[in-house]
Length: 540
Image (cartoon, rainbow, N blue to C red; front, side, top):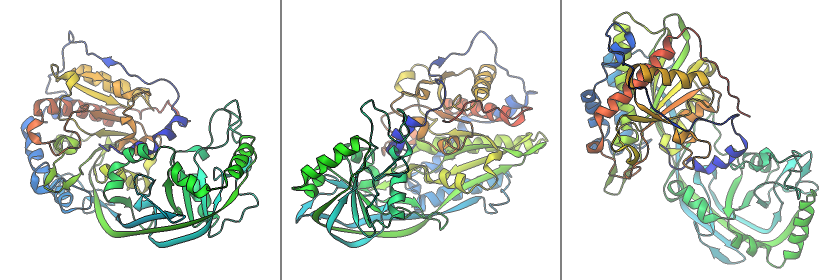
């Protein structure tokens, strides 16, 4: 599971789904018997998912020889080879668009070689005074400016524009986050308390606008550099991986640097009165730019390599509804090595990857016995999840079949451990997102659990107000944001999360098998029900 997706999450405060989401604990009725009838196809094939087989798969995927399965590195390539060999030997089909069982992805790997900022001959410190992401900035051996344009909020909207009467081509601009608000908290742009897209956390609109105006460099005033650093620690301390396929122009933005208030004050210098006057006008909805005579020297030089990743894809065509797809997913990448430490990622997400292999075997057994499901089932092992959900982002941008033919995404990420809350009751699973877009999906999972497995279903992490924001932090989210219902299975957190101690010895394989059976039952029901599930929740 990805730890550093939080960067964009405040955007979600203005993109809320209608209604409150379930956040309780659902206990099965243990007085009712579970189905144990081999003539029931769902029971028969789910029963083939065994703890011993899960252990065999995970013993390979979480071994030191795979070096932590980091995206773009040899260990991940070896993991992909193992998964492909295993599903090929099972007899799982290749998707027509992926004759070698994988979708190839080009990544751009980058790290800073030189990264310096001087303002008025004073040198500022990277990660203390400013932040810059290699993957979002082109190398610039030297940027020199003798003036910087304070451009308010960097907005260019019919109702409010900071660019009026200001030519910024080939210039450096300095902007604030957010947008101007009236005294009652309403936006000058939207006219109400709902903020406009100009306030989005990812700054897409502002940066694309600056690019279109010919801006050379954007300085973004960040009020809490320390917090931003903590939220993006892995990207800023190490290397960055970005989607680098030619279809994705990763340098669509101008170069941009997040600066502290300390740097901003140094740039403003003796021009505080002009800035205060400009701010007062902005508070009244009137844009005002200020040209600040200030010497700026920036050196941004980086090392760039092109790496390949693979989304491994197995396919079981359906019988009567072949063009409707159930996507079952798990990411197989992890964090790689750090010095002598190997991050084996047994739980994250060797457990999910192994579970998918067992589910694929169960489905293939059904096909071989003449019980092909009605809808097509596609198993996808995504790469690049730990780098920012990149494999699933690529797949949803460039699907191997029309994305709107996907009925549901069932995502499995960390299902092999028992958390502190349930240390005395291992028969549980956290369920996230099942009711976010489809009430039917939520009910289906509840019903098959009662009928076959009777696990405790905990929806704590599904709550809107849950600070962990797990709904946004695994591959299912790239389907959800495209309006595709999702259900995400998760065992909860533990002290070994994203540490080299996440090893196979700590996995509970019996519990993992029980969870795998529940997931299989849900997939089997979705693949064989008469009607496509209804999307009855709307994204604003």
